[in-house]
Length: 352
Image 1 (cartoon, one colour):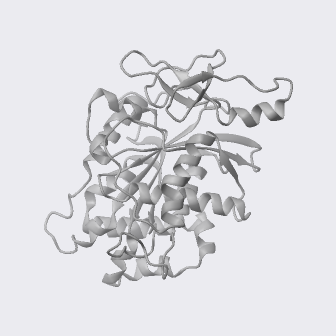
Image 2 (tube, helix red, strand yellow):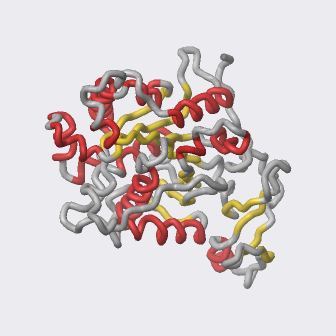
């Protein structure tokens, strides 16, 4: 394949239509999704206007193959956004992991444990994600429902400010049903807009592969569809890698600890401070690679095809749910969920 080509023009992450260089058409949406023009209360007050713009959207008319849809008004305001795709088959725990990741990111930022300032890029979208997923998981300890196949929408949109670079970055997340990711139809063009990947492997599935024949080749069909699309859009380096940053996460890794794996146990024995130490990513990646090579080599394509990648153990909840579809308070909490996201941020230049 030809050498990689850089895509500089900012495009809609849903339909891939180029976003016009003209000022976007700002609108507000009511509870029913109806539009009304956005008019600042006082255009001469920039502080008030910026605050009001957090609840406004811009319209993307698409290219005729999809209905008109909405993006955060400031989606393209900070340069090319970081579009993070959370990739995996159905029921792997993608939504639960993403909710734990974003919840951990916000907590670390608010408590000054992280040299990043994080807030909403799209206030309505972010508030919805927090109430439907993050708070239900981390505060109410509820089991989140599986993402259903349906229309493609952004899961959350954040503005991340890095004091190290002095820059703001728009960071948006896609969390789409695994069954939809496996579909190679045209409506999945949004995959081509992703410029960072988090691949999710189900640790519960791996726990059943301890001695099964065929574990060496087991993989994820969603991984393959995404990799094929990205290869067509971005091309390979001369050595055959994709340049995009990626992290591969073995979710529900706590379930694998019952097999007394000394390497896995070691990572979960560290205190919370280790999660912020990215100098250990190479060592952790080695241990995850060894585990997957033994129990499901096909999953490794989520790391092996990328020039920059890291591999991680994580548990979004730390415990299993009870019969009432809630997690018990004892032992509950995200473990090692922030590190994969920080690794992607570092590879993408967000951390500086």
